[in-house]
Image (cartoon, rainbow, N blue to C red):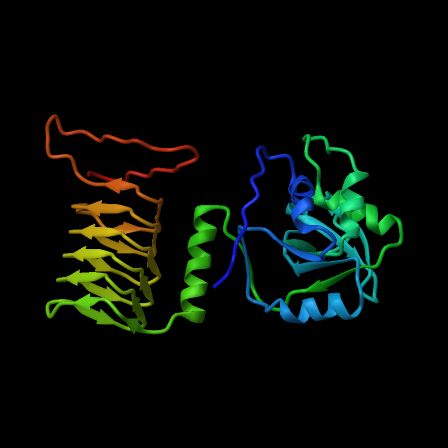
Length: 289
């Protein structure tokens, strides 16, 4: 079982600032910085071995992209040394984008202590790395060979969900599935979950302690723990922990439903749409409801 310590960054003051406030915890240990919205296929073990054996001060992971102007881009020497980092350049020095995974020695703390906030008022990790490069520290770069996904937006998260289900899902049914239900293809159902008169067509994963009744769950859907679905069809969607979707008489597709969200049809009149929608949400209504 993993032991996890959380350190709160009180304001969005930059990635290097996040490392700065974590310094008392990190001490003099090397560490990996892995942005939470990033998913990569490659195993980190090989990169860790290189970082350790070659006693690097920093190792930056990169991926070839078609639109490098939209990313932080690296210029790399033939021997793998990192020469320069440029943020969203108009004329990119390469097509190698920073993927958001970094290996650092304790020297990064010195670099962060010597940089200033950027124009947007943040301590940038790219500036700290560039500080090391400018002082001839041993900073190298490696390219990923597999896919790289940034799940910071809804459609990107759905694409990540599709790839993960295609790549790793195996059939495990630990919950209760009644005789009127059908489970077709690769489907995982967690312990304590109950399906009543449902059709589930994989790849689909359903978490623990869920209740589904009179539902169709279509391919590339992920249902988290403690979710309730009644009289609802979903397809290519992600439903997070504790959400409830009840009596939605149109198919829910290409959707991300957050934790403890409740979707349903109000019975009282006048007939109307009633929403409580949080920050940065997107709601699409097509046709009659």
